[in-house]
Each structure stands twice: as C-alpha cells, then as structure tokens.
Amino acid sequence: MGKVAVAATVVCAAAVTAAAVVVVRHRMKNSGKWAKAMEILKEFEDKCGTPVSKLRQVADAMTVEMHAGLASDGGSKLKMLISYVDNLPTGDETGIFYALDLGGTNFRVLRVKLGGVGNVKKEFKEVSIPPNLMIGKSEDLFDFIAGELAKFVATEDEDMQIPPGTQRELGFTFSFPVKQSSIAGGTLVRWTKGFNIEDAVGADVVEELTKAMERAGLDMRVSALVNDTVGTLAGGRYGNSDVIAAVILGTGTNAAYVERANAIPKWQGLLPKSGEMVINMEWGNFRSSHLPLTEYDEGLDGDSLNPGEQIYEKLISGMYLGEVVRRVLLKMAEEAEFFGDIVPSKLQKPFILRTPDMSAMHHDSTPDLKVVATKLKDILEISNTSLKMRKVIVEVCDLVATRGARLSAAGILGILKKIGKDTCKEGEENQKSVIAMDGGLFEHYTKFRKTMQDTMNELLGEEISKNIIVELSNDGSGLGAALLAASHSQYLEYIEST
Image (cartoon, rainbow, N blue to C red; front, side):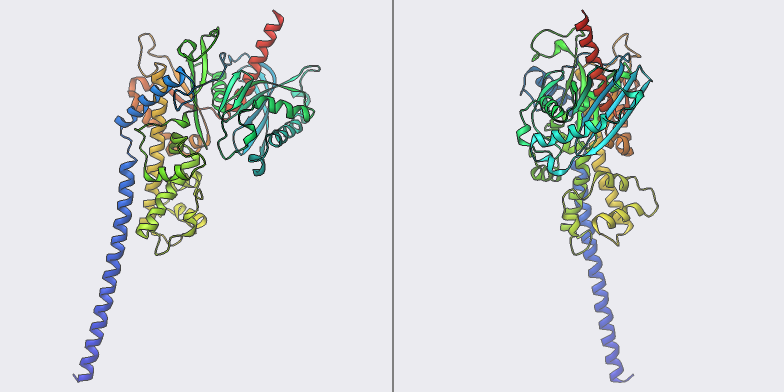
C-alpha cells in the first residue's frame, strides 16, 4: 500500500473515531439529561406521597379545624358558615319556582315545576358573563344578570306560568364566600374564581340583585340565598333522605353538611325546631402541615391572586391540577432539556394546560399514546416526542390526580369523623350515609373519581364503606336553590295562615 493510501486510511480511521466519540458523547449527554429528568420526577413523586397514615392525619386536622370554626368566627381557616337552612326539602314541595345559579364565569337561570319526587320539570338557560363585568362595578354585574333573568321569564309558556296575582320566587345560588344573616340575606366576604368587584365586598348580594330586578321591571322575590354546595345538598336530599353532606369538585371545591344545631357554639339565639343546621364549610381554605406540598404548589400559590389562601383547593380542584403538571414539565424542560435544547415558549405560559387536557392525556389508552402527542402539539406546540417521553408525561398527570383524589377522600373522612359516621354504631349497621357530589372534575375525570372512591374504601374499611355512598348529584345546586325557595315559601305561607 502506498504512503498516500496509508495516510488516507489513517485520516479515515481518525474521522470514524471522532464521529464515534461524538455519538458516544451525545448518548452520554442525552443519558445525563434523561437521568436528571427522572430525578425531578422521583423527587416530585416522593413529595406527593399520600400514604394512609398521612391521609388520617389530614382527616384529623380537618375535624379539629371544623370544631374550631364552629366555636367562633375567625377561629379557623375553615369559615364554617351558618347557612340558615334548618329544613331541607322533603320531596313534597310543589309549585313553579325560579333559580339563579351564579358559580363562576357563567351563570344559569332555571324555571322549575315541582310536583313531588320524580315529577320535576326544568327549563334553563346558560349565560356567559363578559370579562369586563367581572372586575367592574357591582351595579353593572347585577343589572346584566337581572336583564338576562327578565328575558328568561318572558319565555314562560302556559304549562310553566305562575298563577295570576302571585309573585315569582327565586332561589339564588351564589358560589362565593358569604356571611349570611338570614335564609335570604348575606354579605359578600370576598370574591374568588377571577372576580374582583371591590364595591360588592361587604354588600348584601340579595339587596343588590333585588334592586337590579326592580330596575329591570321584574317582580320577583329572593326567597333563599344559598351557596352552591348547600344547593347541591338540598337537591340531593330532595330525592334521598340519606344525604348528609355535599361536596363540589369542579373548577373550585367546597363542602357542606348537616350539623346538630347544639354542636355550633357560635350560634346565637333560639335553636331551630328541626335541631339541625346546614353548615357551609368553605373547605377550600383548609390548610395543615400534613398536606403534601411541593415547590410547584408553593410557586403556584405565590403567583396566584390569593397567596396563602385556598391551599387545599389548589391541591385538589380542577382549576389548578393542569397547572401543577405544567410546572413540573417546565422544570424538566429547563433543567433536563426534556423537550430539547430550547424550552418551549408555550410551556412557559401559566394555566395554558387545562385540567380537561390533563385528563385526556391521563386516560390515553392508545398503544403509542397518540392523544398525549396530539395535546402536546396542539396546546404546547411540542412535536417529535418519543413514546418514552409521553409515558413520563402520563406519569406526571397520574401523580397530580392521585394526590388530589386521595386528599379529597381524606377531607370527606374528616366530615364523617366530625358527625360520627366513620364508625359503625350498634343498631345502625345498615344505616346509609350519602355524600352528594357535583362538579366537572368528579363527573368527567374518571381516574380521579375512581381513585377517590377507592381511597374512601381504604380509609373506612370494608364494613363502614358499605354504608357510605358517594353519588353524582348533577346540577344539584340550581335545583337545590329552587327547592329551598319552595320550602321557604311554604313556610311563610304557613306562618301567614296561622
């Protein structure tokens, strides 16, 4: 072989070696990045842990806070608001009633014809609230609502008409913290869910709505002001006398339950004849050192409109689950180049990943996780992901949903402990206790719902869990408001006739 050929061979060999070194280095670098991503995932998994022992501590802490909130206003992070609902529907209510359900960026107006259990006719209309009215003046918001209500009333047909000379009655579901002064009066404590109308805070929301209805020329009286959770409890009880509590797991979260009136130290005045009182817990504001908070939760809380508030809600409700997933993926992108050398710009946008999208990825059953790939491409503009990467993303979704579902179950156990339904008493072996559930998270996120129910069984044990039934009470809050307007109306008629 000539010198030129030998030299060429050496150069060629050197080039091959150099290329091999580059490949090896590239693989090592990628291997290092993957290891770093797995380290972030493992750390998150450890901090999200919800062993039964921890869940029992959370439940006990919930019970302690419930006692403190019932003892005095301001005694607990749980407001434990007295609802003034001391008589829940019996199923005998009849007549035509209206309901207004203001729960967030949309509200619904309902017309309900009651003819006893199983004989309910409903008509409703859903209306979106213009964003500018969520941060403007109180009068503008209530004028808009009253105007839409007046339009809806104008559509009454013969079958759903109020008898001549009768004033229409309305149940008003208002899903924000309110300090009630009566069944049909209460002042707004604070806004949540993106609302921020300063001049409404401290005002009586029934008075505001009544004045707006008068301005709209609408002859209607608000007979009952209820929180959406109290409405769900009333709606559930209408068809099932075993309903003892209601929980909403949707964009936000809350719980209400039936308490013994003599177990409410802060109650002033005569005890109600029924001996019972519905308590609106406002449990989203629960917090405890036992809650498994991570750096992502702390970051989310710090960047929120209400830092330090609604900590439990930020761990378990639909508004926040997808955002926690986004924050974990962002850290992987920034510290482990999980999606390549450049951090995807869309991934840096808060709340771009919504919980319904997270749910769709979590439930992806295709062999190549095609739904995950599509969601990443459509929402975050991330393409060319490997199956291995997509599996990691599903794992992150699973960790966040599982933690939320298990903590929800612990909260329900806290309520059951407070009212003595967590044990089996002699003579009550077959006494059923029903929790009425509402909200899109519980209704549509199947894995979340199943995990929550499995955790309840795990915490209660086989004997007790047979008697604790968690059941969907769809649209309970709107129907519940109309039912409470009906029962209150009948109560007034009874007073007037005696």
